[in-house]
Amino acid sequence: MKLTFLGTSASKPTKERNVSALALEFDQDNKWYLFDCGEATQHQLLKSYLSVSKLNTIFITHLHGDHYYGLPGLLSSKTLDDSLSTLSIYGPLGIKKFLQCSVGISEEKLGYKLDIIEFKSGDEFKFDKFSLKVLPLVHSIESFAFYIKEDDITNKINEEKLRALGIKPSALYGELKRGKRVEFNSQILEPKEFMLKPVPGRRLIIAGDNSQPEILDDYLKELDLLVHECTYTQEVYDNLPVKFMHTTAKDLGSTAQKMRVKNLIANHINPRFNKNSDMDIDVVYNEIKQKYKGKLFIANDFDVYELNRNALIKKLKHKGSLSSSSAIILD
Image (cartoon, rainbow, N blue to C red; front, side, top):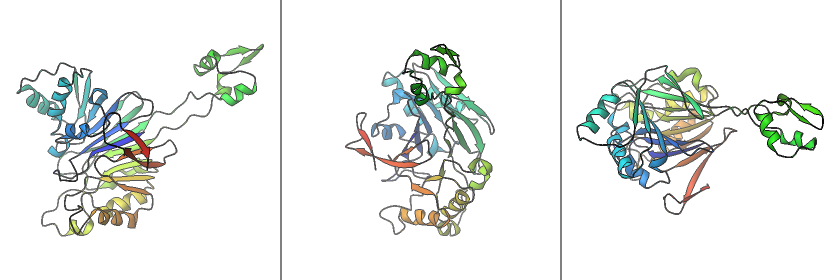
């Protein structure tokens, strides 16, 4: 499973970070999924290895502009790139009206089927390789998190056991995988005796803007990966003249530690934390780390992370320029 961050800034773009967008890919899949689509996401894609033609579904966490203003441009460019495969968009109530207006008023002829699904809290959806549940968050408008449960692998054959009987890989393996009895050397082989235990699917949450990470409650317990906003440090938040409903590094770290989250990636970073400021990103990292003892990353634009089936996460890096043919190697 691979995650590519296309935008990691809060509220507005900066020279270092664009606004929210995150790509998710599953093993042995020829498509990918986009979570949020802030302004200029299509520009970010041009600098990545991801192809719009393989984009299958877009999920929008909430209707603040830095999370979905990039949709009209991306939808139009998909047409111009002759990518005419069906695209599905899942978003809160109002996303359909926005797209009907922004695409319709320009008399845009998309040339492909666009499915728009408006969800509410608690809705569940099933996809090729995973299921997804919509969870409520606490923000100034309705905002949501997506709890993603990858399908378990249940058809792994015990090749070692079969080879011990003198059975080499053949069509017989496929029959056993399909649950059919087979005969070999006058012996009846029962499928259940030659199947390995199911491999549990990975579990992750990709959250939108949220002031109370603890609202995710039991879904966080022993979670393989949490991707969550971290807009402020506690000191910065305490000194704001007007309080905005976002998470602090202290609260995020405390909640992740309490719920024994295995891996944490923080994003949606306030622009004040930058390389030219006396408050660089290390301030955010260190505050989370004071509370959270698990594996922690602060996402930057174009960071790529790989989560394996043992819930071990690695940051990957690009070798050479970012293009459709660029390689990715382990960092």
